[in-house]
Image (cartoon, rainbow, N blue to C red; front, side):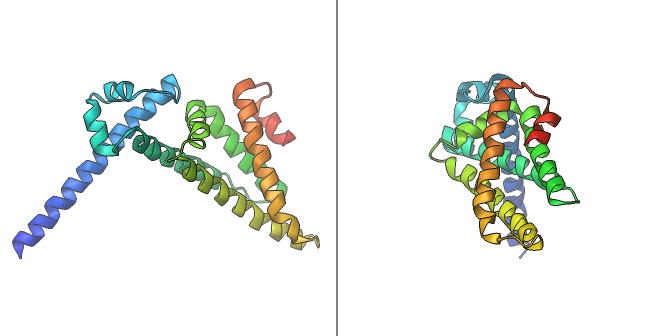
Amino acid sequence: MATAASSTTQSSDAERRRERRRAELLDAADEVICRSGPAVSMDAIAAEAGVTKPILYRHFGDKEGLYEALAQRYVDQLMGELDSGSATGDARARLAARIDAYLSYVERNPQRYRFLLGAAERPRTSMIVAEFREHRVNACAVRAEESLRRAGLDPEIAEPWAHAVCGMIRSAGIWWLETRSLPRRRLVEHL
């Protein structure tokens, strides 16, 4: 019995070490992306991590596997910021808080955001970004439907409105990433 417990402990210790090492490698990849942009090589990531490329491949399978893990990490970060940006108050204040949280992410993490824009076009990462968008649109539609019902308006427009609003915010975020022609607060007010 002690042998089985010892074996289980050893395997969970090994799993924790693998997860910790994988997180360290993702941190190194993130450092390179934040410094140099999303089009980085496995060589640059391996050098940053102080490992060889085969070690990266052992943990992620291939470059697309690494990109998949990074895309999920960045989507989770952005989702967390959007969820924490939900203010109380009326529908306009809540929407403004989420727009501000989104643009704040773009402002603080331009290379990560560029990575996510590129991830939307890659075969293995596009689904991660698509699921994020779908989740945000659905959440927006639910809130819009509630607001429309309270106002005595037709809730049928909630879903297309949610797609329009989310698309507008994404498009404005891409434009603002490249131009920065307005302070973030002003852009939030305009949107």
